[in-house]
Amino acid sequence: MKKIFGLIGIFALVLTGCSGEDGRDGLDGLDAPLPNVFEENITYEYNATDNNWVSEILGYEGTVNGDIFLVYLNVGDNVYSPMPISFFDEEGTFQYEFNHNASSVQLTIEGDNDLSNLSADRTNNKLIRVAIIPAALSEDFSTEELSDFNAVLSKLNLSETDIKHFN
Image (tube, rainbow, N blue to C red):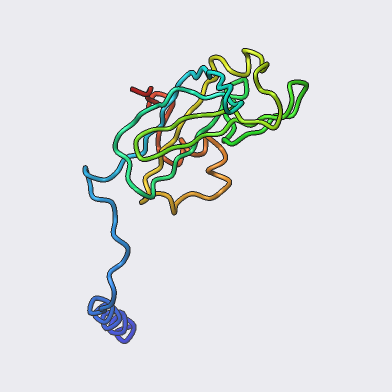
């Protein structure tokens, strides 16, 4: 028994004397980038020159290069589908898309046919949610989790009450 305790003691000393490269840096306390989730009702305006529909530009602050931007469209019954999302129906083929930079996002509806006649239920009061995941947290997400808005909220330890509105 004394030999076992002796070996455990030696093993513990060897482990405490190990050296090597430092592990991955963690997030910096209060200065760490925080995830943000925004919600907004979008009304698109038709752009005849480009035959597409565009939203106003929605602004936000506090992002850095490498952050992940995800935009989800409410497709009904509080179900959010990630953009881009395509529709194929009697109104034609069209897709809800988005573009972003470090401080804003703009949404568009693009298609391969005349989009000027899209119905108001396709272009007015479309509820969207934008999740901004800090680059430092991006490795923690799988593709499946990113495609599910509720999984994103859960993984970020956020709830519906944490969702903000754009400025």
